[in-house]
Amino acid sequence: MKQFLITPSAGKRLIAKALATHPTIQNVLKNGTLVIVAGTTNGYVAEEVLKNLGVSGFSRKRFFRGITMPPNKTVTVEGRLADESQFSGDVVIVKGVWQKGKTIVDVVGSLREGDVILKGANALDLTRKQAALLIGHPKAGTIGLALPAVAGRRVKLMIPVGLEKRVTEDLYVLAEKLNAPGASGYRFLPIPGEVFTELEALKLLTGAEAELIAGGGVCGAEGSCWIAVTGTKGQEEAAEAIFASVTNEPAFSIENL
Image 1 (tube, rainbow, N blue to C red):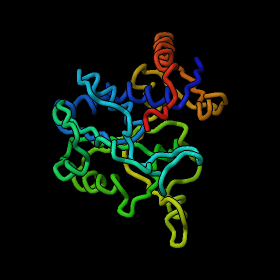
Image 2 (tube, one colour):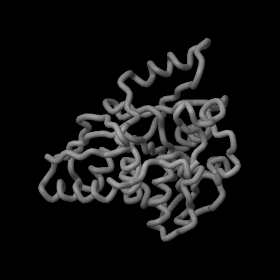
Image 3 (spheres, one colour):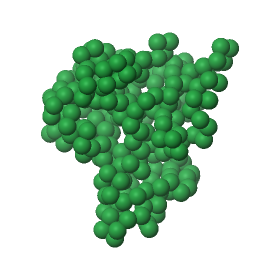
């Protein structure tokens, strides 16, 4: 067994590197439509996917809608920036070709079985492999657009989400509390889909088993996770090389806002 510490930003990069090689993603890039809905984790995913396609011109700057920041940062109500004029859209890729400037709004009605939507999350239940979103939009935002395609036409929903977003209570119990009449703040929506964390990323990239064993830190390690990796010598060495490749990933910067 080998143990590794991974920061949230390094975790985002790890998830992205793995998803770019995921068989489902590889297939849809050849045969269908991939929608990478804007979000901070998905910005890394878009970078890796487009890089593998040999496509340039993508920037993670403003590649999000809602965002969680410290209380002293300027955002409007429900986590939206005061100025969203630089938002450039989601990443929509049709048979390997980036449809620059398109958003999920433009294509969701044409998505069909075999197509894929990537959507991040705000809460993670590791035990049940389920995820949920904080909802600020009165019509449930982009997930409100995506779910009819997922449930109605069998479009696949994949959920890249970092381990730092783990919670302990049942997501449906939390939803009942946060969505109750008279409650204030964000609403809460558990979503059906394939949850993909750093643990799944390591399994896909190395074949080794990975588990969360501890968390936390200071001086830039806030939100970090300790991960134990168990496998053959070759698998553990591969994991060590992967961690080394992402460990210096810088924290999400104000320049991305």
